[in-house]
Amino acid sequence: MEDPFDLRIRFLKLLKRGLDASQRSIQDAIKFIMPHFSRCGEDLWDCVTEAIGEVNINQRMNIFYFLDSLCDACLADRALPSTSGRTDVPNRSYVDFLARDLGNIVECVVPSGRAGLPNLTSVKGILENWKSKRIIDPQKVDEIISGLTKQNDHISGLPSSQSLSPGKPMSRDDIFKRIEEDRERHKRLREKRWVQPISHNPSMYRLASFMPLSEDGDEDQLALDMEFDDAWETTSDWNEDDDDAAAEENELCFPTEREASMDVT
Image 1 (tube, rainbow, N blue to C red):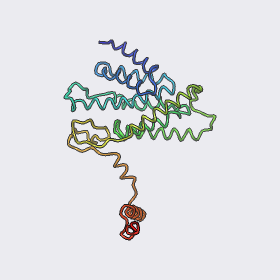
Image 2: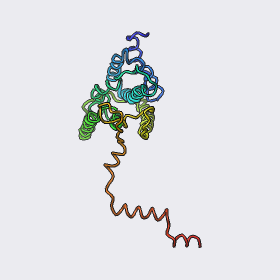
Image 3: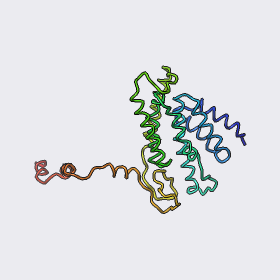
Image 4: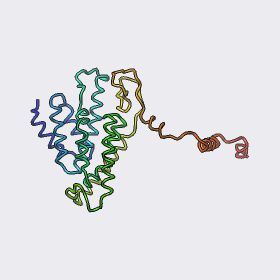
């Protein structure tokens, strides 16, 4: 059994030096941290909050994407009792620590002023993903997203030469590295936005977006399909344009007898 102090040193080194935008490095970090939750999970989580405040702006984004994948791993781990009969899976997970410290983490990843602008869009995208899947309380996520929007509006009103926290300018190599990492991140984020269909088979793993809203442990309650709910709210009422479009589509699929006879001749 490894010493908790040695685990902490190794994990800090992994977060600060070995983590980048690739899925391989992110999965290596997840494989390191997940087995040790029950014994020293909070100590390892402290490494996350410590490292994210010490690394540069690009590495902070790498850690935030690692947290996104860590949430998925924790949800999969929670589903193990129903699929494998395991009873040793803890009720708590790193997601609980993330929900507790989310405000401070976002403040580090997107600092005030222009220094946080490179990470702003990506962070909001991940937060929206967590909100839609209910990984974290949607109301809390909404508050943080609202704060980021206000922060961005405030920065947009500042002169280009003014900044609340100038920070160290990025070098040319850092800029090109950031471009390549953003390509990898955005590709991964688009893949994760695909929502899988609901399955009522209890032996299958359920996405957080399809978990019931209630917290009373009612397993028979069907989950809410957030994607359908959003589409239902944003779709306009049926009108004459829809009638014309439907008639046109119907005409293309099922031409009249006159047109059919003209086509034959």
